[in-house]
Structure formats: structure tokens, C-alpha cells
Length: 375
Image (cartoon, rainbow, N blue to C red; front, side):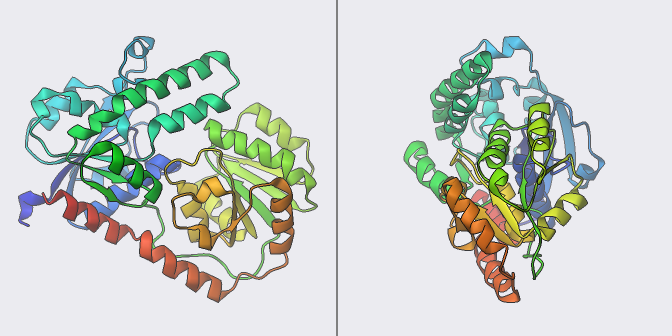
């Protein structure tokens, strides 16, 4: 390919730095890998609180657009996550050339509705089956108006999803999602697993003396998981348990304080989070939403010792063999007590590293995107 063949527009649903929650971790490290592979990335970010980030200037070009989250954006059959990211300024920027476009998530696919771009090669990175994700959010929500919003958004997203047939191709994040989109899109669907900070397993050998749950605690799914673990699992253990993550609410903090063996670490920086992952004996992760790929699972496998998960956490990921899987609290308690007595060895690290490299290699997966787009 010559120099002009390497240009790619990437439309991000959020500013992908700091890379401190699942979706933006995938975006940031994919952009990094594509850039290092020689692609000149024109990054377009919807900004709604994270601000402009100097590190993103390493891309060939960076543009920011304000996301319009006003109430009027909900008064449409177009999903709010899409409608709030419609931008005439973005479309005008895309029309300045004819480079291919990569939309990050269904969120940024309003460009597929624009007739001025109908002849462009537009690809979509699917982070989830979004209507399933929003329906599960609705089931988990106790606040009436929020529950209504999630259910309405799920209905709109399911109705809107056929727009993907207008895309040149879809990059699915898990095997389960690949199979789903193959039946729905009638288009080129490629499995490209999640990108992350690590390119090799950095776990420590030996034993730790605590159990860790981590995640973005402002996300309802993670908040519910943390509360469930405290009440059903951690309360029954006679050992130190830590919950770490972004922006926990006061109810979660108060619940943690009721248990002398539970510590909540709010808003750890990257270095502190990695240290917690590596020092823990057991990284425990649970979810009630078997959608997409949980990037926190990759984080735990690359940096932690033993990983204890429920079935939904590993569904469609091909990572079951690297984790201990348990679904009932009694099973989890028994497995934790067993794992606290075991050493994590060099053999464990080598086996994990070999399997992770087969699927979650940033360089190989960036190359897969380049070969699919064909510029």
C-alpha cells in the first residue's frame, strides 16, 4: 500500500483517554495498534466531560465534537445513544476526503443514515448487541424513569440495528456476537477480540492474601455485581476483600463499611489498579449481562493470579479454560477458600500467556482490521 492508502477515520463515542473503562480501553489501544502498524488515524471524538487529551495528538489528526445530551434528543425513534451523537460538523469533516471510516459502537453510526456518505466504505466496531445490553440495564434498574428509558432505548436499538446492513462490514468483539451479527447483517462480519494495554501476561507468582473485584462502579451492571458479592460472598469469608473502581455511589460505600473485611478503593489511578490486580490472590468477576466482551476480564487475566468468574462473564470469549467458573455463592466461597491455599506458578503464567496470544494479540488483530478494510 502507498502512503495515501493508510488513512482511516475512526469515530469514537467518547474521548478514549484516560483508558479507564471497558469501551474506551478497546478504542484507545486499537487506535494505538493501528497507528503503530502505519495507519494514519483521523480520530473524531464525542466529548461530554472528559475533555481534550494531549496524548491523542499522536494520531494523524484529532477532532472533538460536543455530544448533545439535551432531552429533545430522546424525543425520536432514533436511539438516544445515536441521536445525541449526530453532528453536521463531523459529516463535513468526513466529506473532505474519501478515506474509509470506522464507527466505534452503534453509538456513532448516524453517518450510515447520511446520503452524502452512501458511497463511502464505512465499518462498524460492535462492542455489544446493544439492545440486549440496554434491556438488561432496564431489568437491573430500580428507579422507575430510568427503567423506562432503558427499555425504550432497547426497543429503539433493536428497531435501528438493521442499519448495519448499510455498513461495508462489522467487527464483532466475541464469538457469540459474531454468530449473532452474521445472522442479522448479511454482510462481512469479522471476529476481532478486544484490545487492551497488555501484550503479554504480567502476573506474579506465589500467593496474595486478598480477593479483588474491580470495575467502573458508576456502571449499573458493575454496581449490582459489587453489592451482590459483598452480601452473598464476601460477608461469608474470613479474609480480606477489596472492591476497586471508578465513582462508587454512597450506598455501595456504606454497604462496604458494614463489613470489617471489605475495603472499597474509590478511583484508583492506573498504577494503583495494576498493583491491586497483581497483588490479589483471586480476581473475582461476575455479571448478569452475557453481552460483548468484558475488558476487565482481560485486565485480570493479563495482570492477576487466579480468576474466578461466573458463566456469563466468559460466555462466547473462549477464555473459560483460563478461569475457575462458579455461579452460586456457595460454590464461589468454596473455590476462593481452595485457591487461597494454592501458589500461582510460572507454568500457570506460561499456559495463560500462550492462550492469550492466540486470541488477544493487539498487533495481529490490528492487521486483521487492515486486511479486512483493504483501503
